[in-house]
Length: 246
Image 1 (tube, one colour):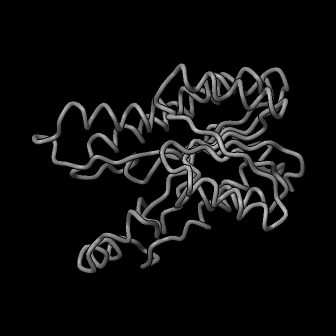
Image 2 (spheres, rainbow, N blue to C red; image 1 turned 135 degrees about the horizontal axis):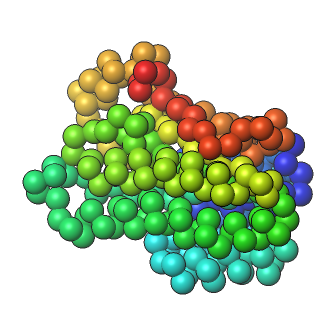
């Protein structure tokens, strides 16, 4: 159980982030629902958490902005007094072939997916070090391991998250802070819902378990890494991809 723990989930207004927030709340954690533009959706997540007897607050912050992240983390510490769990889930895609990709599309994906994770860790880790306790869980991707045509920006950002995870794990281990990453494969979300049936079928052929994953598969892995059961695990990348990257 995560009773009394304060958990920050970035990009928690929908998709995987929403399910993570609900799962951690169901295990007793107090949830900080971070969002960038979807205030109404963030409020809906807060209401869902409260309906199951949980506690949640919403905080707006574009994680790609360094100064805003400092303000965001300071506000959380001021309100809650601590940060026990940080889940870096916020992410975007701007897919396109390398030869046609704009500098802006490359930079935006790196700034949100990779720099955003650095920004929140940069400020939250100071509090975790003071506590001599913390769980940092970063969202990578199967694409960060195997690459994918048309996603050089996304693949680079998610591969970068793996390097960030391993280096941070080494720096913070002596202070009781673990840092791990999860590499999801294709998960049923709004992003995959827009794919054509032909595309979905071609993807499923590449997955040994022959199906897309569900957001709860990721959320339960996050909950495990945030729990006391994962005390001796740090610097790892757990692939939740149905065997796709074997």
